[in-house]
Length: 546
Image (cartoon, rainbow, N blue to C red; front, side, top):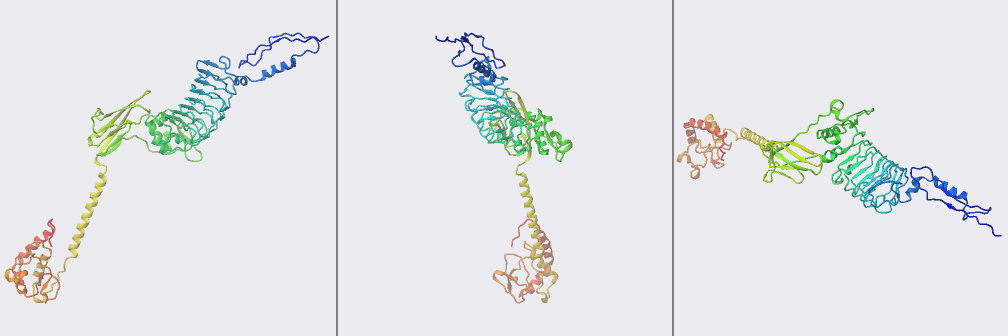
């Protein structure tokens, strides 16, 4: 007799698991016909079946949904091309995301790692990815290879500590990057390389100790970056000199308040200028710009009050441009916005036209004026028209009534005058102390010393004829060419008496002694008069002929 078969008829429907449900439904129908003690169901006991169902119940909902294709209205919420999986207690990113996904919200979950294989397919339409409040501590270097068209990435309020090199390089179209409220203390200098479209970068509320100057410095900066927030970090040193020369549209979005910066007049001067320019980074957080006073207590004070009580810094005022005649001057229109339409108005409310030869607007919006004249002094007005706001800037120009090298020319003139005075003094000294001696070499012959001295003095300093020609009598023993000398100038030398001729002139101690004495006595009065004229001629502008 064959044993009766044990037939078990069971119907177990597919169980629906809702992410928010913590229970599992039992099978709705179990029918069975048991006969005998040898019944079995294909080698599986009923106890094993229920053990399998209990194990399924213990699995977290996120583990099941992360390995299965996403199901809208069950796992996540779908609204057209927006997929929101926020607050679903997920530990991993759901697989097989729709290719049409444009916005993916995974915030407020428990996703601790963003691995390279989080999406196996390229999501070319995804432009916004939200991963905030997940406890995220790891970013793979290949995490963004399949989402290169991202424009908005939110990684805020996580546990990131390090930004490694070239971590965001594939995101060449990224415009906004949120990294605030993490634990970031180390940022590689190349971490943001390749982000050529980045406009806003939020790094506040971290543990950053170094100001990322490479992001805003000329030649290295991200060209489209208009907002950099490094507030509420641990930065103790600012590159003030480099920050002061940045364009206004960068300084307007440069936030560095709530950092342990040491107080200094340089910091106050920079911040006060930004405040006078009404830059948002200075005016919006005026009371949050603080610094630490020198000393052991490290008292925190407002930076903009350093000129009143603490460091007695000089007050900051914005002055105009100073220029000189014939100089060419460029006036900048440093606006808080980038890519705005700029126009200029000259003093006297005169519009700059293409026919104006002395003023023209350059390609960068600045105004070039010159060569300058005194009439170019006045107030120049720049009107900037942008998408969000309009600005008006005033530049005062003062033209000095001198050339830029005028001071150097004045110094040259002064030196020339001084040299001339010194030369004149030397000439006077030479005249007073280095003239020929007035010794009377012929005193033994009975000459009138007073008359002889007058004659010698007259002949020494005179440059004009003072004695009439002696005529033929004067020739005496000289004769010939010595009868009429070319110049009526006599020079006395202490030479021997017997010398007939000296230095091309007849000696007064020779044969003509008597005639010379008589002529000298007869014309003594005339010689005295010529002495006065001779002396006055020395002080005149007439050149001396020797």
